[in-house]
Length: 288
Ligand code: PAF
Image (cartoon, protein in one colour):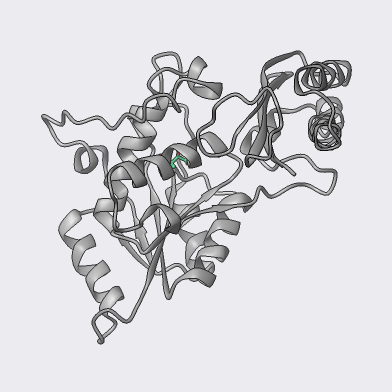
């Protein structure tokens, strides 16, 4: 695996991987990350290997997606351990730019995906999704992957990135080549997340109630139950299970993230963010 942190070196390494001696013959998948890799990231890498001849992973802790009250300095950085993991997974290229390479002095451009960024997690984190869209747009231009993979766990992020690819007519990767990989779950249904480590044993035992309540609500809506009272029931179930508070529990159009008060056959997603102990857990599922 080559580890690269300069743009000129990246361009020649990508060129060599893609041509592989025969121009146009090799495909490249990109898995963008902020490092501190866990099983969820490795699932993306394994899926990427099935989708392309070569796999690049980026590790960049992106300052533009942290708010003033979010501790950028405390974000875990484990470059050596991450690189060793990626090497074991057979990744070809690790793109690890510095902040100066990503945002050189005078950097002034922002990518903003209006509307989709104002709801759900975006409502509580103004500017966060601008930071995500900006850095992902840059990563796409830097690495020029044929496909890029993101976890469905961050559904809003995935919807925003797909919208950006459509709106900016990105050719590499074009919107349909942005692949959402289903959320990896523990055996009891809890969505895997680095935040689960903040749960006490008691909170960890209570946490799967979130996914259970979501499944119950989805089954009810699909059977024809009205959406709003069903979501009220979901909130009550989650709070009764030991969650402290709920930021949102919404059914939304899977692509536009428009609130859906009626299940009308459009592709819909149930999205929830709730607090338990010190952790804020998010989860989402297809309504089908
Ligand atoms: O999901 C993440 O880890 C980040 O938001 C991403 C997509 C790598 C952009 O910094």
